Image (cartoon, rainbow over all chains, first blue to last red; front, side):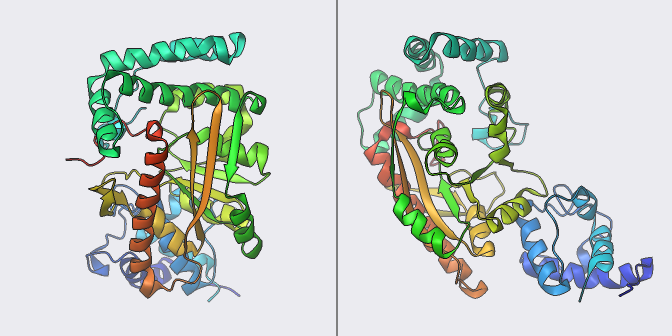
Length: 94
Length: 300
């Protein structure tokens, strides 16, 4: 299966991923208010590692792949909504 | 205990001991043995009794709340119990289980739960000895145990203790990183028991106010969210220090989130927090000197 990992495909997916995050964490904000390039963890959106787990679980349910705990890329993946969306575009199985 | 500015009061509580002194204490403890160095430990407890008015006030307020005797002697005994458990970490990390009389209550229930589903969460608190709990996994029950804890917290002590037994850090999952809870998820899937301390929040955490020893106190919801998300059974755990060389570990079923649906989560978490606070209070009454939160827990 080849997936389209173009920047356009990533931008297209971002609103959906933002919606999943807002819903999973009951955030008191609209999905479109999540800044595409602001950090998700710590400063920025302010997620903690429990929130990360919650996001990881909805991602695995929706897109059919697991975020690994031993991945060196976690810092990069959670560096922004755009980075997370790009990771999903590249890894999704459904 | 070291922590940056902006951390909650318990994290800001400055660590008074300095590295060379701690190193010297560890060296003396290993060289001269537990019996001989307990006098030094008593001296340290006395020092804190005399020169740490904030910790002293916290000890007094707690002892009053639990219904124990208060006063200088009572506070000294309280600090001595705390200092003893830290001192004993040196020996426990060194595998010297022969020095201690450790009773374990509740392993049958634990094994019964594990036989139907490997991997469960152990919720502890700053009550009793942390190290004696970890050593159960290593020494006694032959169960893989990993503790979620702040690498920053008591960092100085940990760096020194790790030099005693470097392999001991393998069963620590550091908190405060992106991957912390993902690692907890993976370890649970491998059948590991994952321990967390559920009596202190991190500031900014959501909490639930519930009765603790007759007064309302705030307990963090984070640990319970993890249990609910990962749908795991939860056991209460504590390793009470009973004086001398005696410890008693208590493990008891507290809650089970394995069949809790998302919609029922909130209620199940609330019930679990209340029960946790209740068990914590129960063991405080049994062994009052084991409460090691030396700050105003009720934040009055």
